[in-house]
Image (cartoon, rainbow, N blue to C red; front, side):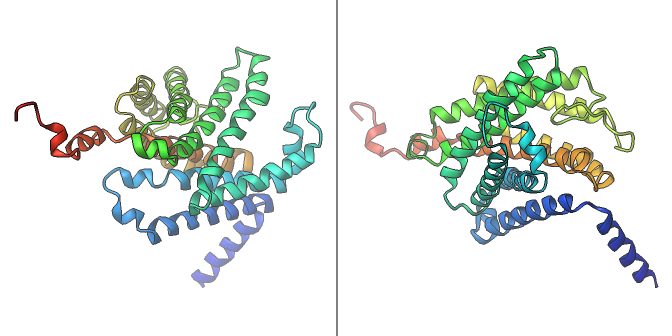
Length: 323
């Protein structure tokens, strides 16, 4: 009897969720599962140590929301098409095209197939979003702090895959550095520092990516999570900006965002499970920001790399004259 009641409630809850929400969760969830299977089947999880295990989730945390958002281009085509600037022709074509590209890129990131190409195109796409839509929109009302928040979020979404693409080049493998990885670091560090300031000033708003909604009263701890994120962002953002301990800084920033995701946005997504705008999109945006920071972490050199490089030199190269 109890089992039948539980099943009935589950079926009822499933039926009241709109189909576009179900599709987004399904496609995003599929990308997430494929990514998990990949890191275990390839042995990446077994090889990673400490917080490097968290860095492995960067592509997954970025790709799963990307696939979900790509799905919205097919289920909410008219809404997405209306966002395309009026001077660009074929609005519906671009809505479908970008949606298909997002899903394909997400699968590339989680499977490791043509990852460098997918990451490069994602970095370019989000940078174009900033230049063509977000920055001009904010410029119309520079006092709108939420407009700037969104612009910097999209800039960071460009920085994450840019860092990943840079880390897959021969130059990065040989030297552990790349000019695009440095650019990506600034693309992430600047939003992190701005978000830190915003969360100190407006702790009643949702943390992580400090957008317009207030943190719901049912979220335990409420404003304290905004201050926790603000402190962590301030420390890690400064380190990223000046280029010190960048891998550790990005990893800890990513861990902070993941913590905020679990304690704030998962409860919101459960309560607002039937809503894209108030539930899935906030959950996905924050998880994608977490993935962005972890992608940067994976592209940053290890602190021990210089010492290891020195230790691996031939003995003759390290001898002093007359020795």
